[in-house]
Image (cartoon, rainbow, N blue to C red; front, top):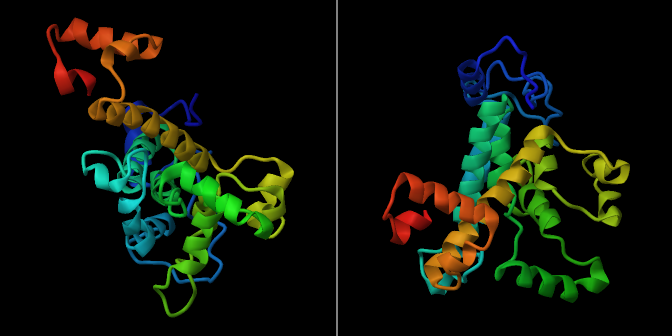
Length: 259
C-alpha cells in the first residue's frame, strides 16, 4: 500500500523519495518538522534530516559500534557483522524502501544509523547484565541509552550538549520505552503513554532493522559453520529462495549460493 497520489508513476516516486523533494503526503516534511531542542538556523544546502544524519556519522559513539557485538564478538574476525556494519545495512534498506514509498529517505537513514548507538557490548547478553546491575536505579534500556547518547553524552558543539537532533529523528531512535521513563520525556515519551505510533519513517527503520539482521545473521552463521545450508532448507522461506536461485543458476555452490 502506498500513500502516493495515483497520478505519479514509479520512477517519479523513486526519484522524489531519493531526492527529498515532492514526498508523499504521509511522509515527514522538513517544512513541518517539530524542530530541535536548541533552535538553529537552517543550512544553505543541507536539510534538517540530512544534518541529523551527518552529525550521527561523525559521532564518536557511531565509530565505537565497530567493536560492539552483533552476533560474533570482535576478536573472532572481521568477516562478521558488528553493530556498525549492521547499522549501515539497516540504513541502506531503509533508504531504498523510503524512496520507493515516497517517504523521507534522509530521516529513515538518520534513524537507522543511530538506532543502536546505545547498545551494549556483547549483544543482548550485555544489555541483560546491565539491566540486572541497574535494577535498583530504574534498569537499563538500550533505546533510552541511544537517546541519552545523542542528547547528552556526545560533546561536539559549543552551543548545546549532545547532537541536538530533530524531534523526528529522536522519536525514531526511541523505539521502545517503559512507561515510567516515558513520563520523564515530555512530548517525546507521549506516544508510549497514549499508545500511538511514531512517524512512518521510524516504523520503516524498525522494519529495515529486522530485514537486515534476519538476513545477515544467517549469512554470518553459515560463514562460521554454526548453520548448514541443508538444515536451513527445512525453513520454507529459505528453501523457496534457494530453489529459485538453483533453478536460475544450476550447479551454483559455495558462498555464491548462500549470498
